[in-house]
Length: 235
Image (tube, rainbow, N blue to C red; front, side, top):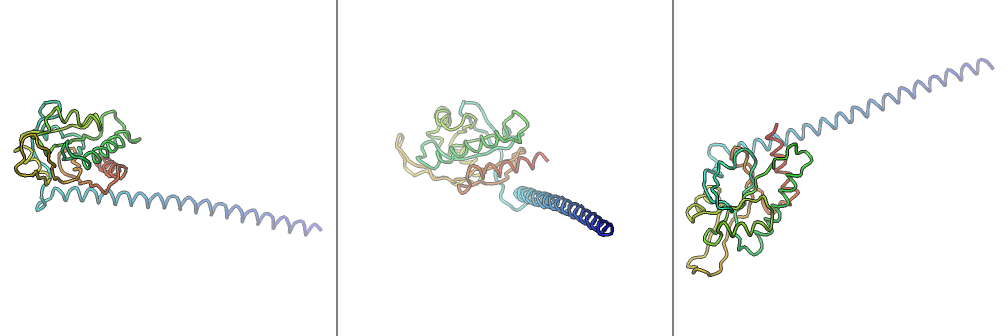
């Protein structure tokens, strides 16, 4: 009887040791699985970050058409605004006109959402806005500073409207590779539409072009792209 009890006790101890060993094994397995997943996520993030950096650097490279450049225009408050005023933070530039019946309002609504998503990001550590939104008219004949001020107030208070002479607008559109066209022979007071490129141009704090964001991007997707570039710049 005693022998049976001792044998049972030995088996029980062995089972406990096995359970402890298995518990430690599974715990270690879970730990290494989590650590491995974390490393995979980190390497994927770094790979994506380096790819964004490579694309941004390539945009500045020799042999590629430069997007952007020096300019001086008038803002919606009647003051001077130049390319130097864009330095120090990311800028989001859109070209359009206030008499646009549908596309410009849709894109400016999207821009307003992008602004709020970026500036209200939980990772934001300062009260300073992270993004400078700019609307440049392709229709300077009708879009005076006062017209721009009234129009842009319907979308977001932080959007800066810019206008100038016909030659100034033609020059900045050329620098940003923006296509625009107005009908010929338009009489004063006559209504008309302006054909133009439909992109948001993301510029970095040094005033260099980073990326063009098109209509296929939702506000959330666009804000994600912009947020990633801002995060990369801070690193």
